[in-house]
Image (cartoon, rainbow, N blue to C red; front, side):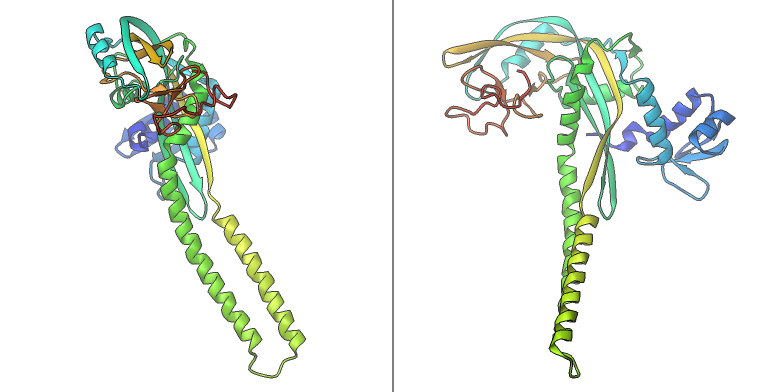
Length: 359
């Protein structure tokens, strides 16, 4: 996961305005821009503006969730769904790749290295912005990468290198003509990005729940005290009038609780900011996986700069694993969460007709 500071939303806005004909001068955490009249009207901003990541009196905000940034991102997504670049980094040596593959541990089977060769591959890298809203607003950004054909996930070093490639910080990257089939991994990235923000959303949900519970306790105490006073009037009141007052308080209490639930319901949006298909050379190592009397072959990919082969995708969920477990029937890959116990016969959704991705 990478934060907004790495992806630089202000820099993106400045570059996009400059590409559309604006005169832009960056000055630290702000940028001065003079826009052509048609562009200013299209974006509903003045012709001379000051952009900043943090809003100010005379500044137009360009942080995550800012209207101007959202409009620019929407326009870019509509015109260039997937950009393509080629990254001519040197792939690992074959001997080194085989040594890495030999360290792959199958929790309930055996993996034999059959050989290695260099090959071309495409990875789809995606930056996704997430916004969670309840009584407050939270936002962030997540960066995920998947092998275009297999959905495998590179290690942290390769992910960081690809982040530099798509942000323009690696001078070796050049524009490519097409995505070479990597767009098929877009659905995988969407599921994986939703999983990647799980820990952060857990923190947000806990904070929202604490505030909701405090508000709930305050409302309950308030209406309990009102009900108690209504049942013990200081002067003589007819019982029917008391019961009517209590019923009205009860109805108002329930209405407040309904409003409370609506106000503290967490609503989450996850939207793609950029999708880039990266073509590169990798070391491809063929493995033979054996489990009981069954066996199958599998290709591991090791990109430039990797310290380990790509993590293998689980057929039962969006996660990946570097310690796979094999099902008994078709030797599908299962992760530690879906198959925590390496003994016995694991339940495999792909074999049982469940909703699972192909192996």
